[in-house]
Length: 224
Image (cartoon, rainbow, N blue to C red):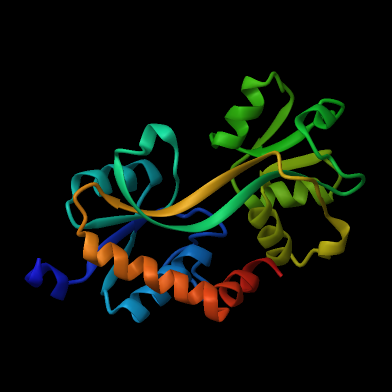
C-alpha cells in the first residue's frame, strides 16, 4: 500500500443536491466540501469523480482502493462496503407553505405531494398508497411547485428543501418543515478491502472538523 498511498484515492459520487453538486461548481456540495477538507487534514490525497449514481456504486464496489459518498448505511449494504464515517444525518420531511405536516398520517389529507422521481422517498410514499404524487426531475422544480401553490407539500430531505429554497431566492420563513418522518444516515463508504489505516485517518479528520466547528460552517453555507 505504500505506493498506493502516494497516489490520489478515487472517490466516486453523483449529483445529489445539496450533498454533491459537481466539481465544476463554485459551491460543490456539503459532502464534497467535507471530503476535500478531510483530505487536507488527513494528508490522504483524494480525487473526486462524478458518475451516474448506480455506476458510482458499482465502480466503488469493484475497485479495491475506492471511496463512495454520500450513501445511506443500510442492513442490506452492511457487508458491501467499509463504513468510514457518518457525514450527514438527513431527515425526510414534508415541507409546506401553510400548516406543519408532521407525519405520513397527516399527509394523507393532502391532495398532491411533490417528490423527486425515482428516489427512495417517492417509492416510500407509493408503497404507502400515495397515488397522486407530482414527480419532478430536479429540486428547483419541486421548490417552484411548492411555493407556487401547485402542490400541498414536498417530501424530501430537510437539507435538500432548505438548499433549493435558498438557491431560488425564496424567503425561508415562508416554508414550514414538519417533524422528521424517517432519517437516513449518510456515510463515507469504501470498497470492502479499503485500507484500515487510511480509513482511520479520514474518520479522525472528520471528528476534528466537528469538534472545531468547521463541519457546521460548511453545512450552514448550504442551508442557512
